[in-house]
Image 1 (cartoon, rainbow, N blue to C red):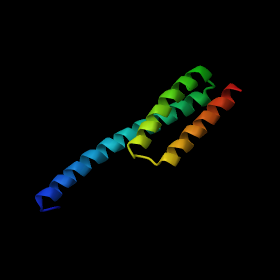
Image 2 (image 1 turned 60 degrees about the vertical axis):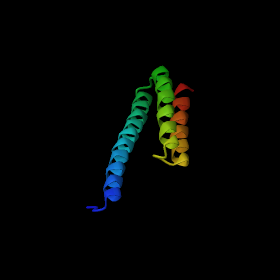
Image 3 (image 1 turned 60 degrees about the horizontal axis):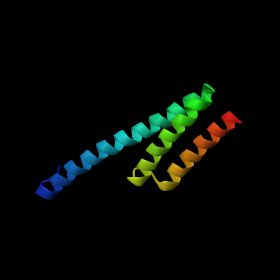
Length: 88
């Protein structure tokens, strides 16, 4: 454990950020799973609506640096392809 006052503060700050980032990343993953579940159920309309919400969550995670930009783009692309193939 840190002894210096600034190091102790840093540990607290890092823990708060880690918890916040975990929550946001978990929510993003849940959204992705929700879209995939709707795709499996062949629910085109709800899948498209859920895709928009999921895209926002992914973009937020990229913007805050929780995931890499390429990772976010890949996730959005794969989901969009699945939804488009479902409606075709």
